[in-house]
Amino acid sequence: MTRILIAGAGIGGLTLAQALRRDGFDVAVYERDPSAQTRGQGYRIHVDADGNAALRSCLPPPVLDRVRATSSVNGDLVATLTPALERVYAQTFPDIPADDITHVDRTTLRRALLTGLDDVVHFGHPVTGYEITPSGRVRIEGDEGDLLIGADGVGSAVRRQLLPHAGVRDIGLRCIYGRTPIDGSLVVPEDFDRGFCWVSDGSGYGAGFATVHFRTPVAEDYVMVTLVATPERLGLPDERLYALSPEGLQDLVATATAGWHPEIRALIARAGAFFPITLRAGERVDPWPSGPVTLLGDAIHTMPPTGGVGANTALQDAATLAGSLRSAPLLEAVAAYERVMLPRGFDTVERSLAMADRMLPSASGGALS
Image 1 (cartoon, one colour):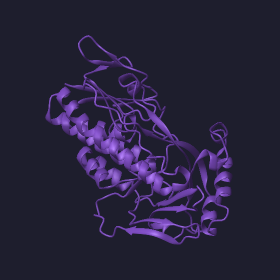
Image 2: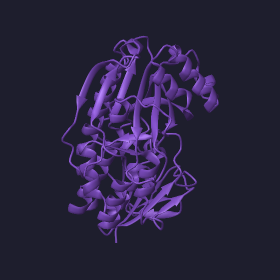
Image 3: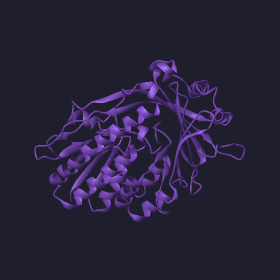
Image 4: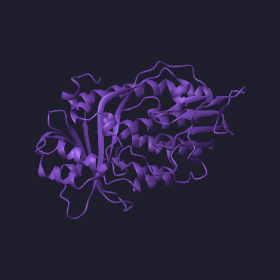
């Protein structure tokens, strides 16, 4: 039986593991996190038509049902607003299929994707490199397989060894994430409650807001709060920003939005669990000779979140690779996957960078794309 090793138990790696196990492959996933509790990577994930198609293609029905049941009630709006909550742009999506998912919580999605994989996923086992054996197999963590997929994110050790020349650049923006629990006393602006809303004051600050109302009561409903700006606009170098406590980050977000609508300020005042991230983007690389090691998702085409497509692209990668492995010999399947994945991924990175320029033009002057 073909044995496939996956580095990374994120969304793409777990989705691929579900598909491969269903298709009869022997699969092992090695993950650096000590448990399934997610690190600070964000809260709400947008799922588009491509992401829905990939989930349907990869997940066994019981797992797909669990993903859907633990997702959020669908939204129907994407809007841009002023700090006074006046609409600048709005697009509605009234005809979303009932079985589609528009957004999920990162933690509950990861837990759902782990369904049935207890004997497959090995937490607390970071993949720091690999070895190609004389027989052409791949060895990691004392395990040996026929194929290794690096799904280990922006800091991928698999990518560093396979493609030491592949670059990931800091695009010059910092994102501060937080979340506000929804209770009976919280006033949520109507547009925020319908989908994703972007608020920009034209001075280099932008903020995203969106609700998560779980279809089943697996966690507390909340409003995702994000502030995006350059380090210069925030007035803090990275060493100071990343040293701030969650309360210090909340104060920073509150100061940046001090003149905004009272309902926005109230959301931020009651928010918690703030953490910062650096927004990065993968730099396009030429195809390489295909072999028993390949890459998936942010490990190869690191995606800034501004297009809302990072998770969807990783899901597409998983579906494409699983489909190739079902229909062709292993190395031919890897080559076919890479011919599709590479241009698709980096084209999507470029679109996400262009979106960042449109969302915060004063921050970049068009330099991001």
